[in-house]
Image (cartoon, rainbow, N blue to C red):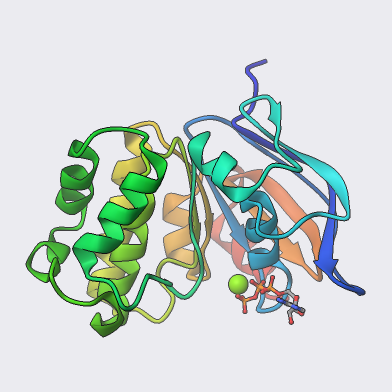
Length: 234
Ligand SMILES: Nc1ncnc2c1ncn2[C@@H]1O[C@H](COP(=O)(O)OP(=O)(O)OP(=O)(O)O)[C@@H](O)[C@H]1O
Ligand SMILES: [Mg+2]
């Protein structure tokens, strides 16, 4: 069997005495889209933050391309090809769109300036906004910048937390198309997505969390839409 792109084994995590994640086991094959779903507050963001290295697990291991990264800082993971666009499309608000992209590109140096051109071609709405401060962007524009900023680090594993949250349908469709295209070029994607229809179109694998535990994990192809609705109607 091929080494999975990412493997999470026996992971427990939380904040101080508040335990949030319990015995999470997740294997993400290279070149696939895995979608994590579940109600508000079940621990989806906590799981992505732990994988990205922003939170240290209390137990368990995280393996990236066969290397144990459980105790590696976020910048080591980014240099290893992991990129994370957190929930809430956080950008460097005082900086321009161009500076947001150049800063992320320069900080990681995982390729030449063509990475910036490619990211802008992926999100052409950003092109006329290059000199605007990121803090002034609309929610949809900021989300596209957040993903573009992840892309300029040339990731092989792209982690996205609710990239369509609070965004109008036409922009949601553009973001969905971008994710489809990025995956088609071979990038592995780990995604939290609350819109069931978007999730079911994108996902190769679906993982459902409830109260910090995995309650379902399997191939999208094995799920009927009715099954998916039942799983999430919790
Ligand atoms: N920094 C923190 N300190 C303490 N508790 C936290 C912190 N961040 C999150 N939590 C708690 O951990 C639990 C899981 O939160 P998390 O943000 O992972 O949920 P989520 O599934 O991403 O929810 P949503 O769908 O609303 O984004 C919640 O009970 C939340 O209140
Ligand atoms: Mg969340």
